Length: 209
Ligand code: MLT
Image (tube, rainbow, N blue to C red; front, top):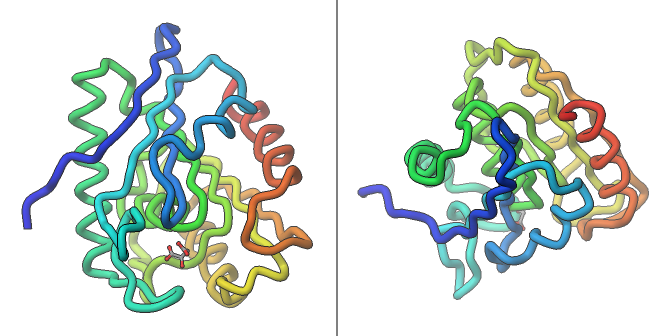
């Protein structure tokens, strides 16, 4: 299968050397969904918001799944490569720094961001993962991030869609791969709440001035 372009919205900050916040929506969302959330982080970064190329009964997603929480890992790997190649080419076209991308993903979007962290360890400069889970059954133990890249992650204690064991596996995989993980378990479900935003904004301001 050939790579397809992804639908996107790009908003330049017009600040030289700015970071780019890469927005990755949840299942059934699109590139407009997370734009209001991004405003909580300030305005000194570019925004690149993508729409997943996969459709599940009309709902956009970033990769196929075989059931709830059961991923088509072959498709996930392909879609991760497709997304990384697309962003790399877009960085030239839109003139943003490919070395300064911070992903912000929710649910399905957090899972493809997690996949990028575990297959392309030097691609992202940081990541905010809301409600992620371990994307692969087996993670390559030789994958190492060399820059101690900061990763924020928040999950819900009463989230019916995520097995806590899969969250724990992701924590282990990211830590073993050399990421500087800030992990939060909140007394909530799958939906984002104010506390996710508050904690991640604090984390962002501390790590990306
Ligand atoms: C996924 O498929 O990525 C996760 O189950 C979360 C979701 O999108 O529902």
